[in-house]
Image 1 (cartoon, rainbow, N blue to C red):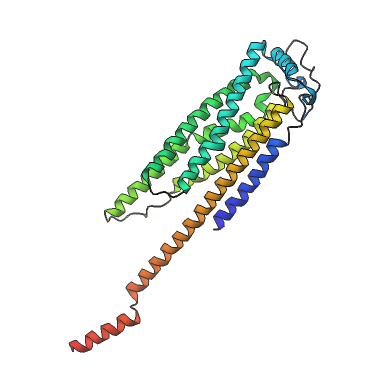
Image 2 (cartoon, rainbow, N blue to C red; image 1 turned 90 degrees about the vertical axis):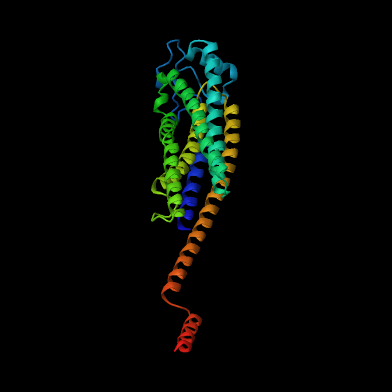
Length: 305
């Protein structure tokens, strides 16, 4: 119960940070400070005299952004291609970390006793990671195209790469845990001396790393929206709509995820306590007979004598 309470408190703090990340920077201008990496003062311009020409994204139009982006990327066609890749990157990464991975994690917390559920969880998470690799590749391409503007100094691509690297080990952790669990269950069924089939050390690592990655990725999505708000790809209106949509869906999913995780942990703690009480009762029964059992034993002894 204490662990579940701690998880809830930490998750609430992360949710607050996510909201702040999503909406804290939407009002920042295209050239209005806040560490804007696309400001000409940071990148030294693009050689066409447009490096410091932007006067604020709050009043920018789509045509203004397109012109600035065309100068930035060399041509309008290249800028439009980059914009499409940015949208695909945002959509795919958001689907993975806001919808797919949390939903597949919740699936296990429903406690459905069916091996098919575990297979869906495992295969779905691997496929989700592959989709995220594709999305990350798009983000890396965009960051390289904008590297002259200091994009790699922004926390969004840095955190994204860290999430990509750490998430690579998650299927490995899950597979090893499942193998150990299954081995112990088979040994116990065969009457061999073994540890009880339960959470293993590597299983706990898999569990908590997954939980942390979900919240960090949701936060990073907010940071990505903030970064897009200072780029030539989107106007303030477009970014605000994207931020509201992302924040709303992410908040609902976080609440659902927390509900199922906390409920599962509470139910599991109660089950473990009941098992402990049952074991203690069995141990007491083996060593100290009840009053009725003692009376029966005495009666049998008297009759035999």
